[in-house]
Image 1 (cartoon, chains in turn brown, yellow):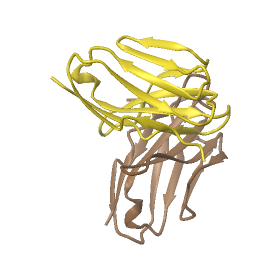
Image 2: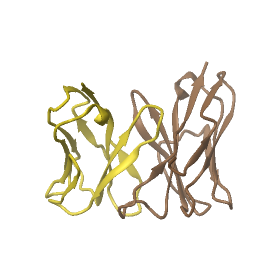
Image 3: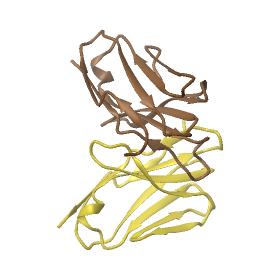
Image 4: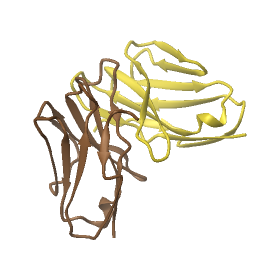
Length: 115
Length: 111
């Protein structure tokens, strides 16, 4: 158990639908990151939050949005889902930026299947 | 666009063999990390290297950071089936920036 909790583990939904993925960071970590992992694209950075504020954005589609709440948990909302959105979605957390050696602690991911 | 290239993409070897995985970029890293990911799990941090020329050892794993901080390698000695997994290099191009991952090297060690 890494200390980062993601729910649900699996999600199957139809095209056009909207889903919410949830992440609780490791205790004490203020930064939360969302990544998408697919076979052809690898791990792609989506967005980072630090203590409730958006800190950095990657290749996140306009149909996707995220937020970090006062209790530091985060949610990733995916709307108007397409078949190509099927992927593993990972949440990670770190105390600060993660570049000072501590790295990121990843959750076990949510496998999203859009049918 | 900052890209991290890993090679090889796939590696299948017999138990006891040695192997090296490479990670290259055209840009300088402020720090570089190696992660290992097993099926159904998230990546787990193995090591962070910060200084050009730095070498770190973790049991049978040796990590090297290039002098110019643009490349890194992971060497495994006497590989075991338990080493099987996806090895990912990831780099920060500046402090405070986002962590960029390479495509990964899928390692299979057969008994």
